Amino acid sequence: MSLKENLEEQSPQIADLRKALINTQKALQKAKDRTEELGEAVFRAAYDATLSMGPIPAVPKPLVKGGKGKAEVALVHATDWQGAKVTTSYNSEVMKRRVMEFAAKSVKITEIQRHDHPVKDAVIMFGGDMVEGLFNYPAQLWEVDSSIFEQYTTVSRLMVDFVRHFLANFEKVTVVAEWGNHGRIGSKRDHVPKNDNFDRMCYELARQLLAGEKRLTWEDCPEDIQRVEIGAYRALLMHGDEVGRAGFASPSAWQAAGNRWKAGSYKWDFTDIYLGHYHRTASEPMSAQDGMIYWTGSTESDNRYARDSMAVSGIPSQRLHFIDPVKGRVTAQYQVWLD
Image (tube, rainbow, N blue to C red; front, top):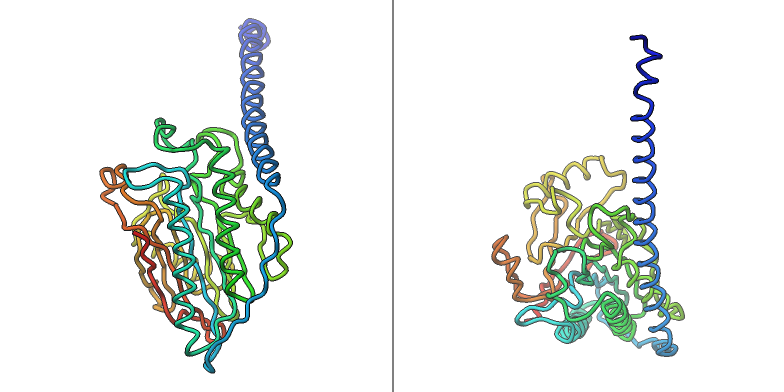
């Protein structure tokens, strides 16, 4: 049989395969469009609902006093609020209380620092998983106390209150925001760009609500690694799922990755790395001993899934550092307990 005869014999089968392929591609595109439309609808509805609450007045500039020592900057790592998560001891109301307690304790610790030296500026790092989301586990709907719509409005407004508390106690505030895996829209198999993320949407809404604050600097975060720069101090802010399979990696794997990045595979010179995601508080040095990996806990408590599946169950906490912007290093670090 010639090649021509063989192709003619197979042409009906080839045509059917082509037709099936085209239909599959159309179905995938429709699914992608539906997912994107869903995300856009939720974003727009919640955005309009939040704006309907009325304008947010600007925070008056505080009179900040300090000792005669060298000025430092407060570095606040707020991460893994898991907004709407429900456990035996955690829900949205507990989240609100603990988040604002963290803000109050951070200011109180800063006042102690100010007895020795000025601390006029603050940098807030939002580390991701600020919402619990709905697309991470098959039964996740039964582990939350509100829908995506409510998570979005509640967490965005809480971010506004959190940032305003710092604006009331610092002359200048800078926000650097990173999104996490719980903000994912759809399953991992859906054709949704990673940075189309509910965390990022919360950041954007809070940022726009605070657009009138002249003493606030807050940029968008399309990338999954954020750069933090305070004078000569440079650090990377990540969520913590960037290394390892299925979003998990051991401390030694993170140290190896940090060493590679510091050696030049990441084209930006930095000192430290800040992570959330694991709901643990710890720190490990990188090999040259000139940089640290800092792990920050969560405001959440009593996560049975984490305890039973990964032997991890942390006491709720967040992180507060003070930075020497001239020498470019951490001068003091605090684990702020919230239990």
